Length: 502
Image (cartoon, rainbow, N blue to C red; front, side):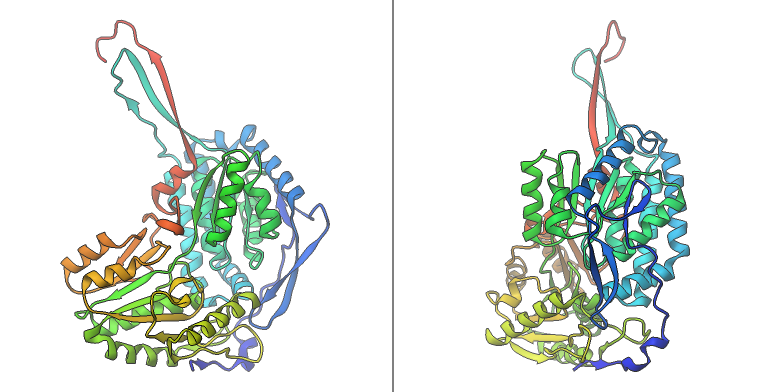
C-alpha cells in the first residue's frame, strides 16, 4: 500500500546538514547544562543517532529565567521603541530566509519532515511571522477613555514580562516563530523549551537571533525533557506567562503548575480530532484532494488534521473509491527525495502509538480499506491508512492519533453531520466542502471549532487567529490576538480640575 521510493539513492538527494549547535543557549552564549548531561536526538529515517544535545533541567531553566529577567528589568529590549525592535526582527527574518536550506534540512533529519515543504512552506511561514509582528511592534496603542466623572483616564499596553514557550515537535520551526515573534514585538524576554524530539533547529535559530542583534538574555533556548525542563518552566515563580503547544494531558499539567506557582498567564493549543464534512453537491475531485491532504500532509502529525471524514451518502461510494486510489498512489520514502509525499513518523514512540491505534480500529470492527502496516525495514514509515464504517464510540474516532490514519463515516442530513462533527472533546478546526452557501453558513456557525475552512483546508495565514474550543485549549496564535496575549493593560487615571470638557 502506498508506493515507496527507493531508499538506496537517498544519499544523493541532499547532503545532511552539519550539526553546529548542541548546547543550551543562555544569555547570548552556548553553554553546557549544569549537570553536564546530554541526550540523543534520533534520525527517524534510520533510527540512528544524529547528535548528542545538552540536557537542560531545573537549574538550567533557573539560569535562563535569571538572564531573561535581567534583560527584561534592566536591559534595552523592552525599552527600545517598537520601530527599533521591529528593525532587529526584520534583520532576523532576513537571516532566516538566507539560511532556509540549512534550517529546512535540520527539521528533515530531526523530525522526518519533507525537505521541499520545509523550504517552500515552513521556513517562509516563519519568516512571514517575524515580519508581520515586526510591522506591528510600533503599532501597540492604548486608548484614551471617556470617563463619567472629572477624571482623565487612559490605558497603556505593557509587555507582560518573562515568557516561557514550550514547543511541540511536529512543526519545530513554524511553532517556534509563531510564539516568539509576537512576544518579541511586545517587548517580552523569553525562555524556550523545544520538544526533546526536535531540538536542532531551535538552537540554530538562537545563533541567527544573536547575529540579528537581539540583545543577550532576550531569547534563551533550553533543550531537555518535558517532565524536567518543561515542568520547571510551568512552575517557575519568575516567569510571567507560559505558552504551550502539545497534548491535553500535558496542557493540564502546565495549567496546574501555573496555578500552584505564581498564577502565571497560560495559553494552550492542545490538538484536535477535526471533522471534514463533504456534502453531496461537492466537487468530487476537490473533496478527495482536500480529504487526502488533510490527513496525510506531514504524515498526519498535524493538530488540525482532518482525521474524521464525514461524507453524505449520495457520493459516499464514489468518493471512497477516489480516496483509496489516492492513498495507494501516495509516495512514502526519504523526505529529501523531491518525489516523496510522506516521510517517517517523528520517532519510535509515535510510530508504535499509531500502529497500536490501527490495531484498535481493526479490533473494534472498522473496515480497513487500505494501508495499516509499517513500510520499511528501518525508519519509522507507515502506510497511508483509511478506515471506513467508523462509529463515534471507536477509539480511532475519539482519540487524536497524530498519524496517517483516516476515519470515514457517512451521513444523511445536515443536522446529522453537525451532530457528528461536534461529538468530540476537541474543537480545533473543521472543514466543509459544498457549493451551497446556506449549507456552508449553517454548518460553519454550528460547528464548535476555532477555525472552519470552507472548500479549502490548512488555509493558515499570519493575520488569521488560530486556536481551539473545548479541550483543544484557549488563547490564540497568529493575528493581532497573539500580540495582545503578551501585553498587559494598565489603566492610568488623574483628576481633572475646571476642565471645559469631560
